[in-house]
Amino acid sequence: MTMRDLKSRLSAEEHKLLVSLRERKPARHPPPEGQPAFGERLADAVASNVGSWTFITVQSVLLCLWIVANGMAWFMSWDPYPFILLNLVLSFQAAFTAPIIMMSQNRQSTIDRRNAQHDYDVNTKAELEIELLHQKIDLMREQELTLLLQMVKRLEDRLLLAEGDEKPQARPEGRPEERPEGHPENAGT
Image (tube, rainbow, N blue to C red; front, side, top):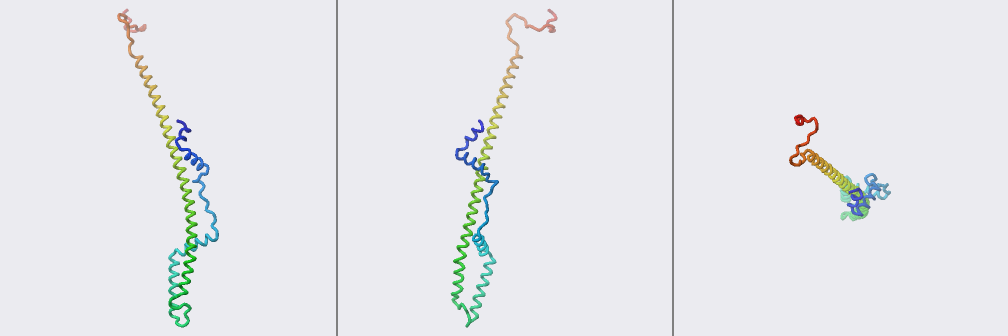
């Protein structure tokens, strides 16, 4: 099995994606932040201030002061008891703050979506690279096992050959075993 065979284990789509991700190198190039426009900065500031305890506390104190000031001033009250002007001010505040908060949330949602896509790209590349590494390791293991099996087979053949050389040859009947010259048993003949 070769490297080409390893790549063929990935689908064509996965291979294209891996090549594309390798070229882009998403882990080294995070998505650009960019400088937010004035409106975006304003929306973020309003959303962060309106969504704080400081804002709630200050607004509650101002509402109480408004009601007390108009309740105590019997003849010079600028907004008598049903507090219609206060209702109008609060309605304007709600009418403008809600869309501004929505703009800030949409912008944050866009940033989160871009970051999530970046994370997905990095994770996908890592997964495909790890899969290729596993396949390479498996290939190396298979090649190593094949080599070891061949070596064991050669050793086995050598041992069988060596054992075959050590066995006495079958002699024809009646012929004495031939010994080399100078052998101690040949001394008597």
